[in-house]
Structures are given as structure tokens and as C-alpha cells.
View 1 (cartoon, one colour):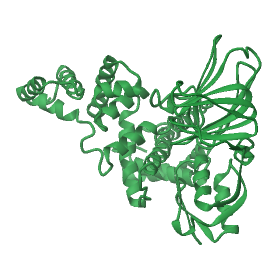
View 2 (cartoon, rainbow over the protein chains, first blue to last red):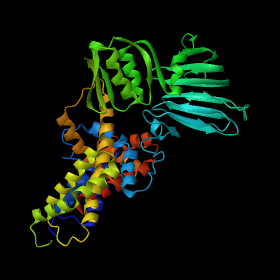
View 3 (cartoon, chains in turn green, red):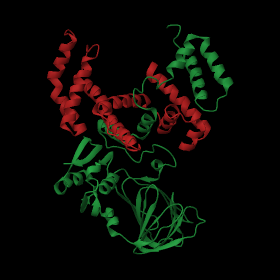
Length: 314
Length: 167
């Protein structure tokens, strides 16, 4: 063993220093003490350097990008690979990756392109659209759904209907008044569409007064206010049956919408962004929908990879 | 076969078991092209090894090497997707060149392998600290952990990486 080969004990000490100094809470004195420790013996410095585990390993990848990719890489795909190797069926479940408070750790989550229907304990049901996440909390006092991302359609049930039924979103709180409705969260605002019964909506905190939206109406709201009520657009509810219904949409809007149902990047060349399109597109096969565009519009889809697609002039 | 030179040994394995290995891989990948590619890669790996002496169960051995490649294949797929998603979230996403893609994925696969075996939260805490430069209080808040858990996770992660890389 060379003089600089760290012993187990030295490695443990070096780790202690690394852990302390990475905390963001270390004092100058500690930094100096660490430097002294490193100078005591070549093996100390060796162990210290070896623990800079990302140094020289990132190449040209910006660290935050690497971090994001490594944290959000779908562990289920890797597990699927393993399960195939083991010859058994994949135990994929809902792998809890990522962070609390962000959609990934929600009680229920749908992947891109996935729709899921759940039975509710009160006899009702809900259906989650692609890329959605929510927590369910049903107890003797209340029925509560915390929508974290995406879109959900809810049909409340009758069992224990005296308990209030709440849907919380980051932008405001909804209270179902015996009902069937859907909520779609966007970045800046949310859309509430009521098919049956009525829903009270309170933007932002509970201190705001509620607006009541009735069957056949829809409304957009953000943290500050509820916008003007509009007639219900039933086309927007067709995802429940697996379709996207489009009437005279600019291609860019269709791209953005289809992008919700597939992984990766779907871009629209500005040269064709304003072309208008109508049609019914199957959501389970968004790539087939893309391919079909070329038949009615002067566009073609260019695949850089399966996850990077551009619509461009044919 | 121990008397043959190394290349000749691989050649013999190739002739005897290549189509079997392709079939074995096809069952696991459900794609002819991928199966053919990985079968090829498996034999390339063998060329890089020191010795194949004393090989009694060539198919079991080939399968072991191929398994590693299949795991990496799926690892690469999921990393590529996550990486492209992270690019798409940038204000002005630009399609990366094929060359850049290969390099970035090589890097990510390497690091992902190094982190193999860490629990998801330990992994996240470690990445947030070492790549995003977050302080422990920030990490604790983001991951819903106590400060002492973050500290403990960091210790675990450093130890893990050290063992993977140097022992």
C-alpha cells in the first residue's frame, strides 16, 4: 500500500469533513481546520480529493441539467429492464422518486400518455388525464383531493355525502356541491368545467369569497380572481374517452396540446404555426396523429429522436 | 479452449453462440435491431477482457455479460428521456446534435451507474447538494426531510461513491 492510500478511518474522516463543509452551515474556523487536516498526511489529501466524485465526470453537461436528468430519470424503465432479465413480471408499482410537495410523490400519478380511472371511497370516481398528480384524503370528516398537476374529472359519490367534498389546487379551492366536474391546472390559471350540479370556487386563500359555477358552465381562475363564466366546451372533455377534438385550431396550439400526451419535446416551426386544423385525434397514439397531419396540411414531422420532434414545412 | 489465443477464443464463442445470444436478447428487448446491436456489443466486451480461460458454461457467461448491457440499455433510455425533458423546460429549447447527445448520455449513464444502489431520497439529496449546490436546510425543505437525515444521507452517499470508485 502506498503512503497516500487512505485507510478506512481516514476515508471516514474525509467524508465527515465533506459532509460538514457541503452543508452551507460551516464556519470559517471549520474550513481552516479541514485544510489543516488535509495537510497532515498525503493520504488525507488523497481521500479528500477522491470524494470530489463529480469532478471531471460531468464533461460538458451543466451540473443542474445533469442533476435534473439523474433525479427524474424514470426508475420504472430501469426496473422494467431488470424485471425482464429476472424473467418475472415487473414490480413497478408507483415508485416514489423525487420530492414531497412536487407532483412526483403524490398519492396518485399518471405518466405521460396515461389516463387512469379511480374508484372513490364515497362511491364516486375520478379520472386522471396524462401527466397528472394528486393526493386523496378521505376520512370521517371530509373528502379532500389535492390536485398537484394536470387534469382530473370527478364524479362525487353519495356515501357520506354530508361530508364536504374539497378539491384543493395551488391556485384556489373548489367545493363540490353534489356534482360532476373537471379541473385542469395550467401554469398561470386553472379551468373548471361543470357538467352536473354546481361547484363553488375560491381563488387563492379561503378568505376570498366563492363564485358558484353551475352545470353547463365553465370558468377560468387564478390565485387572484375568477374570470367571466362561459358556456361549457364539451370538446375539452373528450379526453375522458381518449380523443382530442379540435376545431379550427392553429397548428401551434395542437402541438402544445398533443405535447401533454407524450414524452419529450414537440416543437412547431413558426412557418407553419398558424395553419388551421380541425379533426379528432386519438390520444393513445399521439405520434400517429402527428403523422396524419401531413395528409391534410403541407407539413412533415421530423424525428431527431423519439423524444424530440419538430413539425416543419413539407 | 484455453490453448487458443484470446481473439480466437472469442471467435469460437461467436460462431457457436452468437445466434443463440441474439435470440436470448430478443426475448428481453422485443426489438430485432436492439438485440442484434447488443449481441454485437457483448462480443466486443469480451475482446476487451484479459482472459477467457477456463470457461465452462459459455452461454451462462455470455448471458451475464449481456445482462449488464440490457440494464444499461434501459438506463440509457430513461436518462435520455429525462434529459430531453429537462432541456425542453429551458426558455429557448434547442435540439441537441446527435454528437452532443451521445456525449451527454455517456456521462449521465456513467454517473447513474456510480449512484446505483442508493435509495431515491439519498440520491436526490446528494445530487441537490453536489450538483445544484443547495444547502442542507434547502434540501431538507425540498425533500421534506430533517436536517439530520440530510446529513446522514450525505454521509451514506459519499461512502457509497467512494466504495464504488476505489475499492
